[in-house]
Amino acid sequence: MPSTSPFDWIDAAGDDEPVIDPGRHMRELAERAGAAEDSASAPLVLASFMQTTVDAIAEAIDAQPTWRNSVQVGALDGSPVAVAKLVAGAPRTIMTFEELIADGARTLLIGGAVGSLQPHIRIGDNVVPTSARREEGTSYHYAGPEHEAAASGPATHALLEAAREDARPVHEGRVWSTDAPYREFRGKVARYAVEGDLGVEMETSALMTVAAVRGVDVGLILTVSDHVFDPGWGNIFGTDEYAANCVDMAQVMLAAARRLIAAEA
View (cartoon, rainbow, N blue to C red):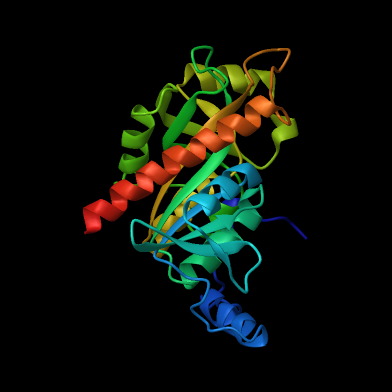
């Protein structure tokens, strides 16, 4: 049987109702857990792939566990806030993202990591993506290839403002999202760097695309963990330095959340 291209994946073959509705699924799971269906919800969610970042946010908002193991709920400046743990890779990230939206999330601040493509963007810097190159597959189930993955709403602006007040340099612009970190070819790295991409990671383009389709506001901040432009691939994964950078990123996310809360007051 011939394979289909990713650009065909939004062809619903005549019936575009999904078999699994995330809201109904969350209500079913809450009932089975003996919990109120809205007990894992908050309109503002801070989420990260790094447990160190999640832990720092959870402590700051005095987060309490919910029936969902990956979600805790607390308060910041008198407003309910949830903190969630994400799993690397666009498919699993978007499953959680959809579930958070079904639970009531309307603004989501996401903290992740990125490998730098540019020599002037150093390990420990922060990157706030405003657009993304779509080389992951998940987003093509939501929008065709003509869709530009971008984020320019209040969440992105709040993260940029908070990051500019942090001691670490911050860079804004486009990142490259890929499903295959072990297939980041040197030639593509060089070409995309010339074309202006700041770094490479795995989820940003999917998060931006799904946020646009679902009508929610997403902003991302990424700590630079490695130098993809370096033939020796300098990186700090698993080090105390990386953990400290993740904690610092949590503080920027919390500062951005406070800005959003104050703007709503």
